[in-house]
Image (cartoon, rainbow, N blue to C red; front, side):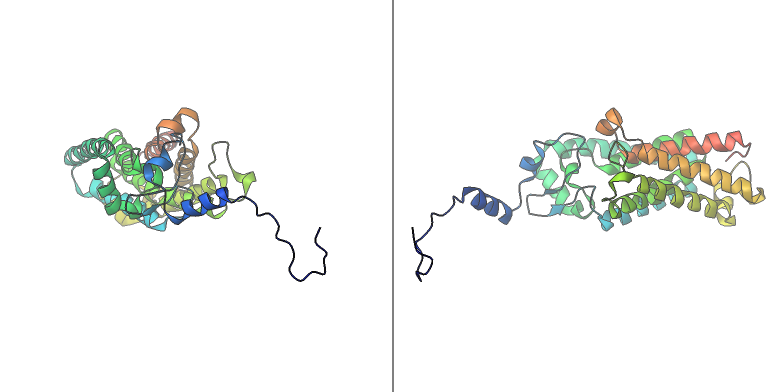
Length: 282
């Protein structure tokens, strides 16, 4: 034993460092997209890196660029439905959806093309979308179904609720992600759902109170002639439909679908049911 008063103590055996070395070496370079996603389940959202080192966030990160892109797409779809005649709007959007579907399949089959697309659109992509259908396909498909099955007014409202309600719900959920008591069984934030309800209710109330919206969409009944309670009731019903559609990602739904598909369809169904029940068709 070495006495404590000796100036140069005896060397102690060093602990093995293979784990530390491996972790430091792995942290110095980004993992490849293929290795990071090979062990993931289809229900997960995870960050990833492209082949050129670009970081792609997961859905659990704020990602403001994507949220802005999401809102702009909602505005574009709503404007297209207003400005184009119904037949041409349906033809154009169907062609776009088919093109995106084919392109997505080809992209996932050819890694070099996939890397090229990720390098171009990486600022609005998520990590799990490197090897799965991206959100834009479900976004367009959901709104195509809505535009084909429902009136112009309901389709426009659904597009705007999708464009603005979903990003607001996501931002609220991420901001309060540590509040475990306010999470549903599927991991969705109930505070995010409440934010979506509030945002979509306010949005609908503002739209139904705007003469320009009524003139452009030509609803079957004029919201400007409704009473304040009727406007609020319809707006709250649509907001609730959008919020519940954003929340409804359980089991097989979460595994195979996307909230970008469910929100416009669910919002449109809710809008139709509420306005039909109150005899205030849109």
